Length: 174
Image (cartoon, rainbow, N blue to C red; front, top):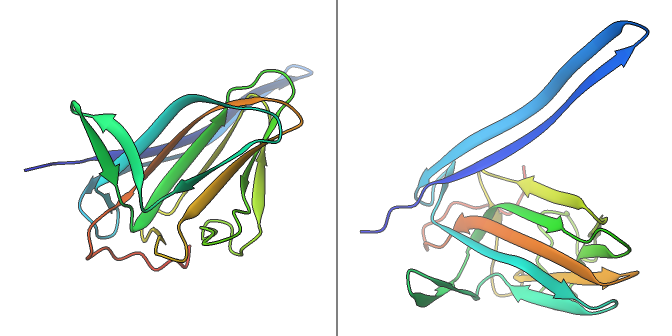
């Protein structure tokens, strides 16, 4: 039987020295997701590394039909909810990666409204999670669009989520 575990990690830290006084602090988040489709669980991960989009080009990923080669076979991952997503704009020059605003069947749950988008600037990361409940993916909420703006963009993307019909995602983002 298949077994899946996942992890969502985020850390922001600093060390600031001013006139002999030092301030060091951080904010951290680390959640391990067990195998399953209930709260704080996930069943699958999908990843693409170092994909390049020409300036003004777009790609739409159907979150209910993601393909990849893993374990020597082509896998189709049909997410019914997303627990976390990370997108890294690896571009070091010009080129903003716009995430969202897919139009038809747009998956906008992480933004809150259709038409919303996030700009991922060069050498930057966009990461967001809803580990507890997940954001729903269904026939009318499934398309995630990435667009290169102001220059060519090279990016990596990874998504972790649930694939079982019994998943508990509410799509509320709360």
